[in-house]
Length: 191
Image (tube, rainbow, N blue to C red; front, side):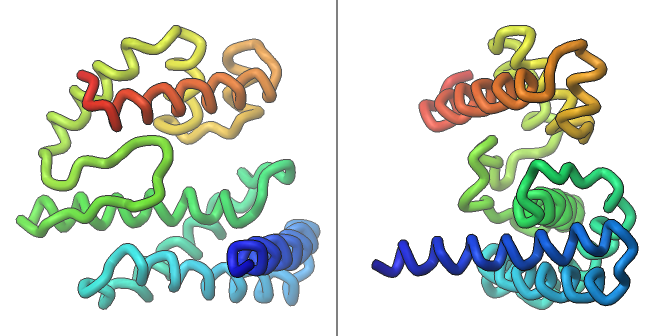
């Protein structure tokens, strides 16, 4: 029952923030402040769950993410949930923080719900990049290219579709299939 309640709460939050975000995109300043406030509240929980005892950086990460949302607000695809878009940017900010911390000798923590990849916890970036490249090389060309364009280069689905010359839904399907396969390989220890 609590899962149903949680799902309903998530859907209600997404509807409210989407409505505010779309009004903000149309120039409504009050709606913009409302959307950022709602997103910031979710981001605090997102970062606290992942930082644990190192939660001192939570507010810094929230602010960095909100700044990135502001800077990249034109890249928002209205066909996608605002929460998923904001969370994707938050994940990038968190990984950036862990990389900076790793460069100073700090320990990394795994992101517990990233479906795309099980991020390595302490491996140097060079090794990770090599492992990722090996896994990507095993994918069919269409899946590999769709993932590289959208997940690595940061293009929107529409931008990736235009570059490849296929529909946006074809890009989404290729990304989904490729990420699913990568996830299976990573969980299974494939190299």
